[in-house]
Image 1 (cartoon, one colour):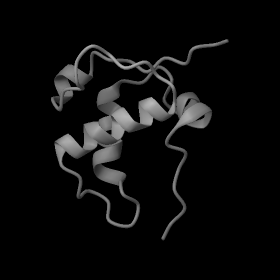
Image 2 (image 1 turned 45 degrees about the vertical axis):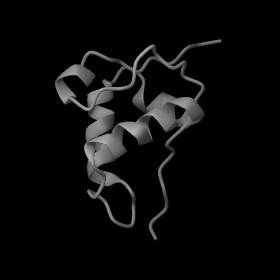
Image 3 (image 1 turned 135 degrees about the horizontal axis):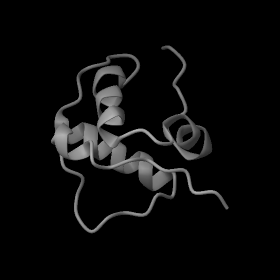
Length: 82
């Protein structure tokens, strides 16, 4: 199995800082899981992103992440400096 990229915490946040959740969704959908990429459904993709965010201590919103890419374009990942 190929090595897995950083998908949470500081390394993840640095790589994805300033990028939209739609971009991340497209990446997750086409690259994960590493041994069988492209098999996740839209719901599995946003569920994976929600897990990535929770592991990275990104606060949850009031609603579930939508699966619609157009809507996800409106959400931007921002690194919070301490």
